[in-house]
Amino acid sequence: MSMNNKQRWMGGVVLLGGGALLAALLLKGNEEMHQKTDVAPSANVQQNQQTSQTSGQGLTVDVATEKRLLEEQKRNREKAVAEQEAKAAEFLRLQQQAEAAAAQKAAEEYAARNARKLAAQESSDNIPPKDLTDKSKADDTKTAQQNKNSDNEKKLAEQKRLQATAEAEKKRKADEAKRKAEADAEKDHKEKLAAQKKAEADKKAEADKKAAAEKKAAAQKAEAAKKKAEAEKARDLLENGDRQWMVQVALAANQANADAVAAKLRAKGYKVTKSPTSKGIRIMVGPSKDRATADAARKKITSDASLGMKSAWVIDWVPLDQR
Image 1 (tube, helix red, strand yellow):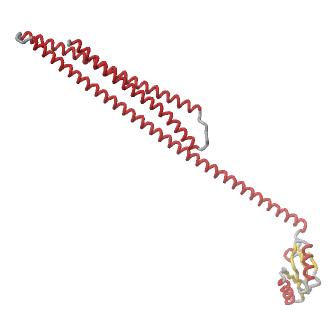
Image 2 (spheres, one colour):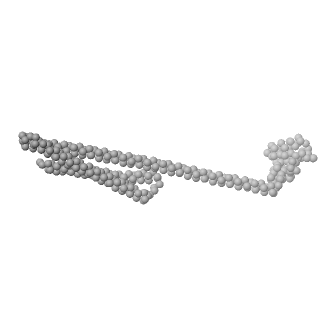
Image 3 (cartoon, rainbow, N blue to C red):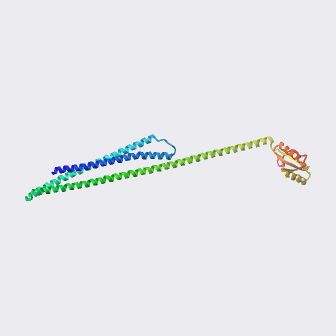
């Protein structure tokens, strides 16, 4: 096999291997992109459902928010596609570099072998041409195997690098999604606590308002009752002035007789007042707020046979300290 055929064969192997690896990477990138696209809406829907269930108020979904989420998902998909295309372009560039390096190395080795052949021919004419051909073939095989091994090592290293990069990116996105979920949960918890505190504050404010209204009403009622009492007192004072209506039941000649009569009346539950006069000690029951009440008391006293007081009468009496 000539050198040109070997180079074509090696180049074809490299292109086939690179094409297969590029197809695998693109397929894997598309699967990851579809997985992200499928997972993101589900996560958003689940999050929206959890938010709606937590609020407990049956709010309708905000159209602007849903539109923003769809645009954000679209941008994420476009970003993922751009990243996969960039990775594919980078791999293609590395593959082209590897192919160029392999071609250059093969050309240099070919030139070196030709130089060695020429030197060997000049130094010794006793070596059979067949041995030189076999040695050249062996060198070509060894060089091809070395190039193949080198290319395989480079491909494995590139595959490992791409795999590590993909895993790191996947881990970063998973961590970011976890942090976002935790932040959303914390936000929902804070909003729920704030709503509870607001409800409690509103309830307390309503209770305080009701208590204040009841207190105000009670104060107004008490004030009205006080004003009514004062009005009745003023009316009574206007009508009766400082008069005190008394029922005089007896006029005792001495203190002993006055005390005996007073004791008898007090035993019946009457309020007794004694007032000395020039003719004796006046014994009275009362005072009453008006003459009618005093007259009713007089009738009751005179009709009580156990008291034996038939000559009681009503008088308009003023205490000595007020005369």
